Length: 112
Length: 116
Image (cartoon, rainbow over all chains, first blue to last red; front, side, top):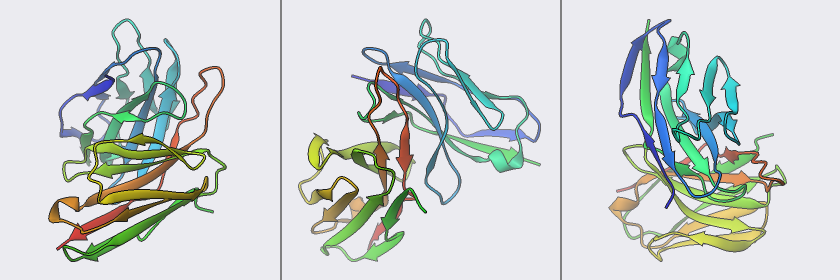
């Protein structure tokens, strides 16, 4: 079956530090890959996505590249802010309109 | 102008009660979902409807019954609530893409259910 594995959290960084959250996946076919973010007390927001190999998704300074050869979609940001503190979820779907399969989520805390 | 709206946002109820959570999307999407988020933040799909037809029904107790009166609405009814049902329930919607184009999924803000 399809699955997503994220690096274990929680992750605590100082402001302006470099962020990497690892994500690897197992899927049949050619999945689309997503990063969602959940701020405290809120729902999930789409952060970025990539629908085919070598695509790079980017938004709000975050980036992730779809690597088929390593089945990975690591999230990176060059300089985090306190406002980036949230839970980040890596997810995949095999076809549009099918279920999203989520990773376990990674709690990020950024200290001033 | 909320794209996917759920009501209520908070629901506190006693064990054994029956309750419903409502979801509506105004995006014109044809597929809607219910996800459950447990206390460790893990998200698991429960149900999915496409144009009012049930297409995903995960291993969920039959006390949970989804109902989709039209493609813009997907409600979740829960009978005989148990302590273990306490969680955050998210509604989501998506639209079918062509040529493997995947537009992503839009989530509601969640319903925090607490069973006491």
